[in-house]
Length: 128
Image (cartoon, rainbow, N blue to C red; front, side, top):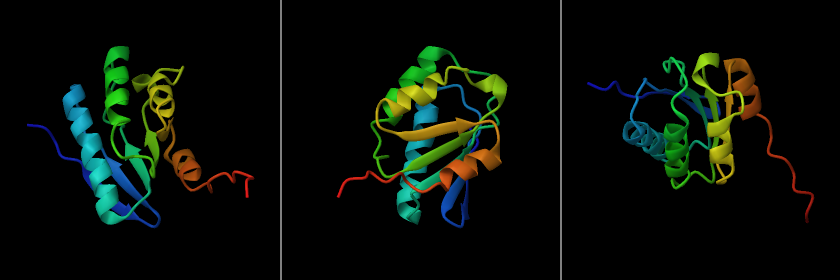
């Protein structure tokens, strides 16, 4: 039996603890639920706790998941994800897949750094 996502509201962001899963379909279902919860609770910033993932998934898993997640209505979201060092790739592959498709996503090894990035103001465009 798969564990459920754990949501916790904070001042200015939604925190989500993600249980380990080894299926792209299940990970995508989690992502879809997170996007829906952010919309329902009116949050534009989300802090993901993915520390339950023990090791880096295969590259093709990350690619497929990133492509699928980028199809969700996430244009308004800023997403910070906290991961274990052994559960990611140093070239930030998954992050790049998402960012190249317009998702404002970044992973961190430290929750404080993730929150700092999450709370940074959006850069000004200089136009106007």
